Amino acid sequence: MMKRTTTIKLSETSQFLNVYSESEIDQALLILKELRKRHTQPRNYGQKVIKGSDQFDTLNNLLFDKFKSIVGDNDLVLGSCSFLEIGTSYGIHSDPNFLNEHDEDQVPHMTMLIPISVDNDRNLVENTNTVIYNTFVTEYGKEYGKIHDQLTVYKIHNWKFGSVICWPCLQLHDTDNFFSKGFRSKQAIQFCTYKNKNVV
Image (cartoon, rainbow, N blue to C red):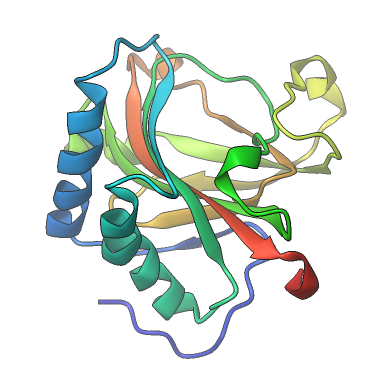
């Protein structure tokens, strides 16, 4: 298990390896996929658990508290936890500001992704990646595909099972073109996090 050696105040894109065991991820997926069965969803979707729901505390204790203990950043606040079934590219975008997920004195901070599988096969998970661009924007949840030629890639994080990939909500990012490799979908768990305004 990964052990914390120093306090890390998360503010830039990074990847932490071997954070979660297969058992921990399976427990989280049981909760998230049970919710999925109750809803008809489009090709791309996230079945979301937000603060105040019955499952939120369980997922917070199971996954998020462990990650906070590893990085040592106790100012992080979990806003939501989602299961993502990615069947098409979202396009280059910033992440949404889910106002109903946080209090008025909190602001969106980092998005965190836990890679799980490609085509629902964990053995294929390392065949895809997340692309982070060297550009920050001021609007949440907006698509920026039209300026692709003006962007510079900052980091490409290869997916690894049980790892956590992090980036600021307002940093542009996208999935890779996994369709060109013959794959149809990829699966992950996502955290949206917040911080109090007085510590940002």
